[in-house]
Length: 290
Image (cartoon, rainbow, N blue to C red):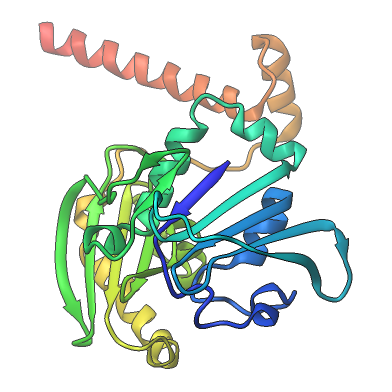
């Protein structure tokens, strides 16, 4: 797997010790350590820059408190774009299996082009994966409402065509700091649960152009306002289904499961409801035809 970008501040703003130190530091959203340890056991990083072209090789088999790396001089290549080229080799077995899936490339490119859509759109970043240049990926769903909350937070709510496509994306400046799933955890998505409404098709995009420190300072108040804003627009997410729950004597359910050849109490409940509805429909039709 090869990832290329034209970023020029990766090696300039951080020392080598800061970049390769194992710890909780997050390098300008790059999160190199997390990516490295989750994908493979060997990484090659090439920076092609007129003033400082360098090649690093990191090997996971040689580490202690700090990640061991080898540094090599590299002659600037004017035939390719300036930037950083990262090559991850000796991939983890689970990653190899995942990559072999037919849909992997398309999904990976889609997520990456969404994550960096603002940089790509503004021409601040050129990103390619396996020689495929990425274009910005924006939400192509029905816009339900758009508003400014607390004067600083632009919020857009979309209704997706896919039932499994939901979540909240939070951008601070050009950086996506929370994707859909991590955004759900951040704002307590479960607190949206309400009878007769389903947010399984709800996608929320938040844009904040201030400093992250200020965002973190005020986020508790903002999240309360955000949850309220989503609930105020819940009519776009009325549910077409409802969950029926009730308790019944176990022995009776077991008898019915055996009689009807079903394996679960849920199946018996569905069969019972369907039978009642068939009787209702039949009687209604008969009454109508008189």
